[in-house]
Image 1: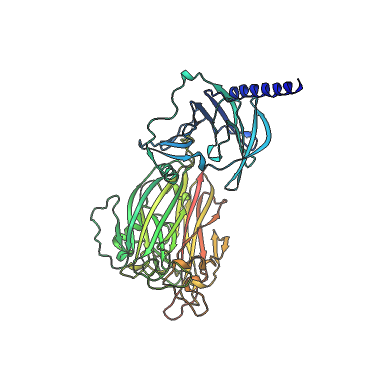
Image 2: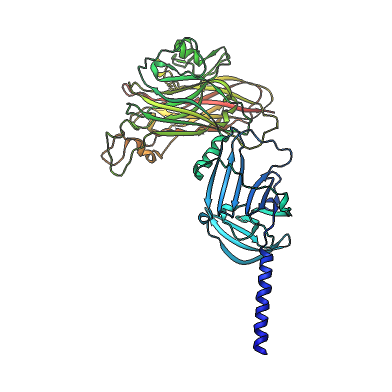
Length: 574
């Protein structure tokens, strides 16, 4: 009797557990709505996340906050967890109509560590699973009690049942706030028949990103060399590259997009040698044309038509400082070519080095955003007397700061290019920046009313390529505003050896050092020079003067030093 009772007990227990398990696992259709919590506070900006489940398929959607208007380039995306085929899929439909998707098998998802920890969420008992992805700890709280399946974070792994809470690094949570059941007969099939082109995850992400970014190709593999015989069209039109100063300056009128102030703009330059073995000064610049005279006049008609700056020795310099009727070229990126990248890769080998095919300079130029809109002239210069010269490409990339339309009033900014001593028309006779010989560069300017947060973006590099030249000697730059010293520093780069692999034609010395390794005055071969931000917050309305003082090195025979400096004032109107 005892044995029978025990067997009966276990049999009844097994039957009851089987019945319970079937009820526990019985599938339903429904929707889970999640909120986002950041550092303990619900994020209204993040909107809501929804996981909808029906007939073995879950879809994850994000709903925007009420009243939010999305920018046109936001793709229509949906993620699907197909439990019928054990695949995770992501679908995108671009505003161009392009439709494509990526697919990943459940077996490719990371393996979760299931713990014994329990937590009740919305009345359901949840178990904790955890994983570390890219140094981020992710905790998933899941349950099988709902009869639903899915997760708002499927790429972190899929535990059985449905995830009601995910926590990343302890401070970013996606938490279910409601579970809604829906009658199955009212539900339509979640997975569309047409998923479009199947692409791998890398291509999928690239297409999504590229759809957000507005890219303007300015120059495409343009040759910048001495002796270029290209004849400029008589009538200047948009999107035609013009060659000036014997071919060492190119310029183009381009149409740039009108964007909101939350955009970030990058200038990306790709350059390689087409025959020139030396490191050369390069610059990408805007040509202001709002004044009566512009640097464009000098390019078209010669240096003599530009306003003259005369130093204390009576020497004339063409077009280097702002006047009432003229603004100098507004520098976007100062860069330096390496020694013979690409053209000399096969002509010299060095043990342990593989030469790069090009130098890439990518710099944030967002501070010039108000000038980088509409129709503008953009130029590029590489100083050289080589018939092959250099090959250069330039594109501007506009990245939105939000996927929502910015409805706030755009802040009005004041941008005033003050000086630029880089002789962009070097090969057309424009003087080098030697006005610092016992003197300082001086410029006068007017500040309008109602400005705040005024600053100057200042670029400075020293040149004179021999032992006593300013290229290889530290020199103090002093900046004076209305006679008062406001900033001092020494432009210097001591990391030039980092870029050895871009410099196949660089000379190698007996002691193991290469010419390209040597520290320099604010630059290295194969790099761009960052501007220095100088706060001028006390600058008031009215007339002002600025002086730049640098102790220029003395000449040695035919060798001389020069300084290429540029400065632009930027302020916000209150």
